[in-house]
Length: 477
Image (cartoon, rainbow, N blue to C red; front, side, top):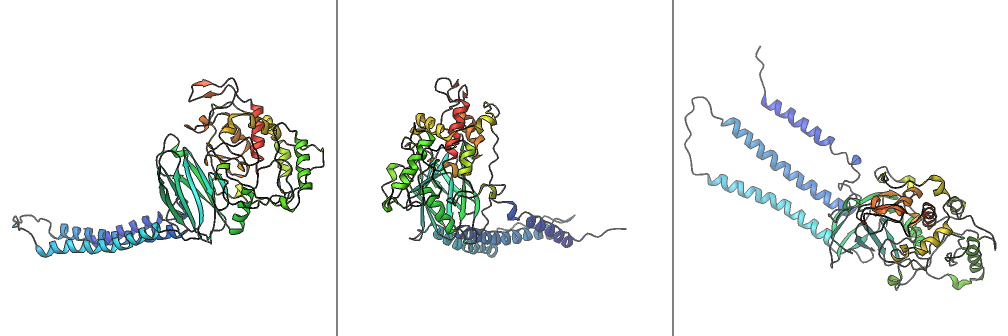
């Protein structure tokens, strides 16, 4: 029995199968870094333009391919057919196949130009201003109207327009939060701008950010986290960032904290904090700058700090990691808002493994870290020449990230590692193995520095000293 083939039925089946494959590939929930979202008006505009271009492109493709198949099948050479007569051309056809694409290009060009002008326009005057500075290989975020500076973790209030001014401290970078907005380059000696409004329906959510322009050895490791939060959560976070970083007794609301001074015992620091709280009157409600001194000329805002009860005079405070966690945990007054680590989606959580060739630090040593000792060690090391901590007068560097509230961040190393004692300890011990190409030197005693090709001897930090510094830094909430 001879089977009859129906080209139309076969073509319809193939088209239906292709359509199913296309639809199966369009589940945006499986691609959290996709730009095809409506999380901001920027991405909504770009997505709408893409859909329009895809629509017209599909029509052109279908018509052209259908006409091509028709001509191939209809006018295919038959057995015994004579050679057809050659003609010069067909003016009507030539006009049509020139005019029709021109009309289609108009349908493409008009929405494209309109979208470009809309996304490149100036931001509204009341937009939140954020300065973004790209470094090899980390991100600095400044909020000039609040006098706040932080690193690698960006907080944005949902429903409020944010205007980013983009600069680079060294080479070319590109700022990109795929799920919120398009990328924009950071160019030397030039300020670029980007603005968008996170959708008010987002609430508290976390998003990945990337450098999208090759910038050197650790380009792929130059990440950051973006948190969209409610207006109240953003205000709470800002007030926390404006406060000085303390790890001892925290004064009552409206009182200025007295951070421990290098050389003080934990008890002396607590006694001084209590004395300051008792003697301060209404005028003690002074603003605290969270930016380095060179940026503190702007108006200052009044910080709000946790209302923990100070220790009695002369009482010793447990400054180990466990002791500080107990003091600064849920039993204390409500702290400033930070995005909860346990609510980070799986694709946001850093999972970079610790290099196997870094000397191991035991859990017992990490648990014995003492924040008071750690502050003394930190303040006597080269750390203070690179990093700024508002509350530690010795630490006034401007080269590396601001560490004022580093203990409140979810990640370290520009989004590479979770911010916990173990990862932070190995980061301090051998940064150059944790993240190739970084400026920060290898500090661990007897560790091999891949840049100098030598082992660290004189001046290297022991595991106990590293554990103490870790306890100090993680206590800076």
